[in-house]
Length: 206
Image (tube, rainbow, N blue to C red):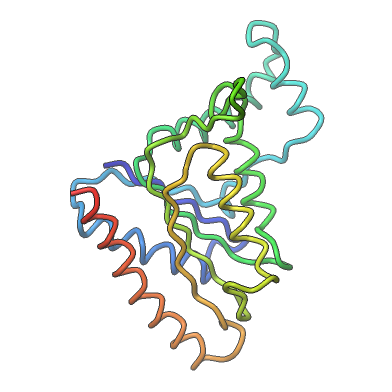
C-alpha cells in the first residue's frame, strides 16, 4: 500500500488540519506497517500557481518547450506521479474564508491535467485517478458541517470525483476557534470518527 498525505495549511507547524491528517495517517500506517508513506507539505514546498506562463508551457509540445517551460511542467509532473502511485490519499484541508487554501487549490490545479488525470469522452468526462481511498481531514474554527456555509465538502466531492476519486471519507474537527475546551472536545470526537472510518474501510478491503 502506498499512502500519500497532503498538508494544505499555510502553516508548516501547528496547523490543526495537519494534526488531524496525521492522526488518520498514523492509524492507517499502524494497520499497514509495511505501507509506503509520502508526505507533501504545501506550506514548506508550495506548488506554483497556474498562471499564463504555466499554461503556455503546458500547451507547448514537450519537444518544443524551452528549458524554463520544461522545468515548470516537471513540477506538476512530480505531483501527478505521486498521486498516480498512491493507493490511499490523506488530505489535510483547513477552511480559510469559507474555502480551501490557495496552497491546496494550486495543488489541485497541478494534478488536474487533461488526458493524464481526466479525459473527455463521448459519454462525458472520465476521471483517470481511480481505485483510490481518500480521507479528508477538515479543520474549522466554527461549526459548518452539513450547513449551507460549507462550500468545501461539495467542492471536494466534485473535483475529486471528476478526477476519478469517488471513494472519499470526511473527518471533521470543528469549533476550533472557540477555546481550549472546544478544541479538546473536537479532537476527541474526531479521534473516534477516525477509528470508525479507517477501520470500516480496511475491513471492506480485506
